[in-house]
Length: 352
Image 1: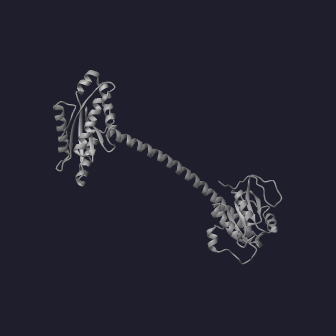
Image 2: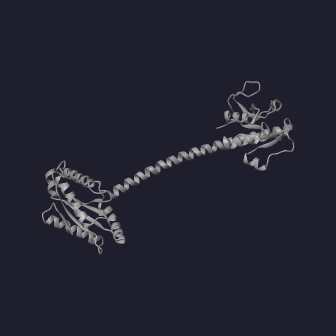
Image 3: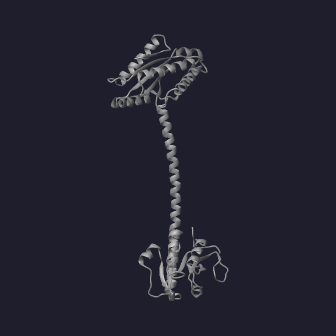
């Protein structure tokens, strides 16, 4: 941030003097050597709030632009309108505000042609502080214009400092808020996972599955699409728990969920229905296609060696949504199919 205190900087085209770090940097841009000398003489004793001036001289518009690039902390430029071109001064003013985006430095335009003044539009556009004839170099009005311009600079610097501080605080608060929102989002997802997933196996729980199934029934009826269900039950699971222990049984449940999840499609929905029973929703799938998929799963489970319990088999009941079905009738029919599979020998797929 620019302040009214500046480091020592070389001046152009004038004798060097020892420059205090506690000086205000002023750029004189004029193509007349005499104007530089008279300006320095007129302001040699001038101080603003106890600070002396440091003068930097440019003798053309291009020279002024280079000084401005090299000295972004300059507080004021005394800018001749006509130098190498008739509009050099206005060109420099435009360069300051639009190319350098320097809205801090104050601009006092000067001319040696009495009676000429810049358009009001130019004054507003480039934030010109004042316009003086060169004959006013030693007048009290000139010093007053200097004081007003430097006061304006100090006020703008102060406001800009507060703006930057506030902007930094807003950015910090925004980052903090974003972090809190991310944490809240993570916690919400974690909460949803706990509310919708079976804690042991990671499959959807029954409550979540019921919600999905209800929505799928409504969608399929509205658009006349097909959907099928498969319900499976691990055969003789009580005996497995009794023989190998409940920890081994829990491990087998996790393994069977992982096995099934690796075989079904991304759009299919697997849920733990309760105990050793599971339900699979097959969207956009016919009864026959679901029977084939269930038979493949049954065979995969039969062939798989479970880590802590060895071999297991499953019985499957399969059904398809009918035109006059509702949630209860569809669930009852798939449950009846599973019951028949278990009643008639287990380790098989029954469709209804």
